[in-house]
Image 1 (cartoon, rainbow, N blue to C red):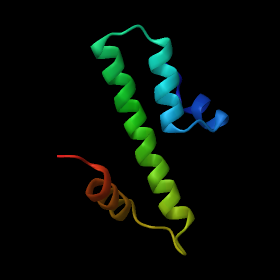
Image 2: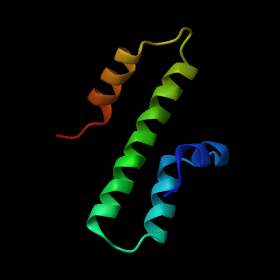
Image 3: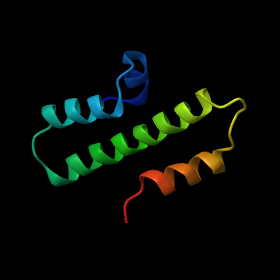
Image 4: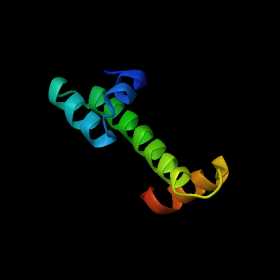
Length: 75
């Protein structure tokens, strides 16, 4: 599995990361679940980065987390 520094240097999106990792990993529920969780973390950070990039001021971590939870978490 690639680490976050490799992903950032390649400017790989969470979706590209997910596809590449699943493509290269034999089908195993535990491994694939681990990859999915990493992709979800990356996606959350992408959203937080985008919120901060287009905001006039740095948004609090609490605000970003709440926004992400309300917008992207499924029940």
